[in-house]
Length: 188
Image 1 (cartoon, rainbow, N blue to C red):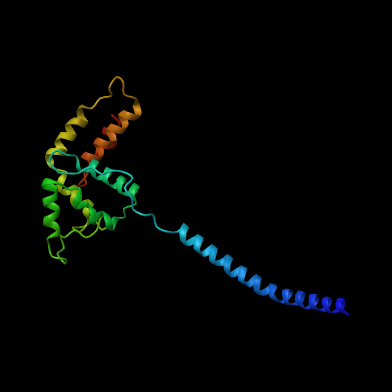
Image 2: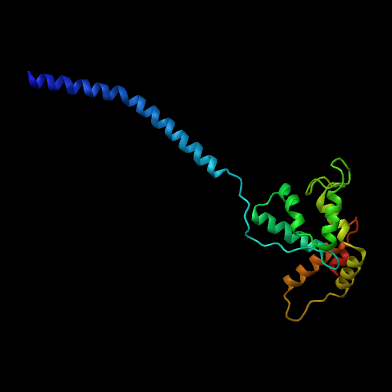
C-alpha cells in the first residue's frame, strides 16, 4: 500500500509539474523578449559626446576660416557633438574678433532674422556656417589664396596625390559666392 501511495504522490507531482511547464515557458518567453528589448535599446542608443579629438581656437584675421571650420566639424563629429550642441560650444573656441562677432550676433533679439539659430542647412541669415564663412573669408584672404594658387607648382619631393590635395584645398578656399574656377583652368 505504501508503494501505491508513493506512486500516486509521484504521479500527482508530475501532473503539477506538467501543468506548470506552460507557465514557465510563458515566463521564459517574456524574459527573453525583455532581454531582446533591452539589448535593442542599448544598441540603438545615440552616441555619447566625448572628447576624443581636441579643437583649436579661431580668432579671425589671417587665419583660414574654411580649414578651421572643416577641422572643427570633423572634431565635433568624432566627439559625438551634434549640430545643436555645436552652437552651444562654439563660443568656447572663438577668440578675439571672432568671439566679438559671435557675442554680438547672439545678443540680437530671439526673433531677429539675422540671429544665428542653426548650425547649417537653411542657407539664410540664421545659418552659422554660411555666416561664419561670409564674415571671415575676406577679400584679402581670397587674394592671398588666389596668388598662392596661381603660383603653386609641384615640389620635387611631393607626390601627385599631395599636390592635387593642396590644389583642391586652395580651390575650396577661393571658390565661393557663385564663383567657380573653370574646369579648363583647373586641368591646366
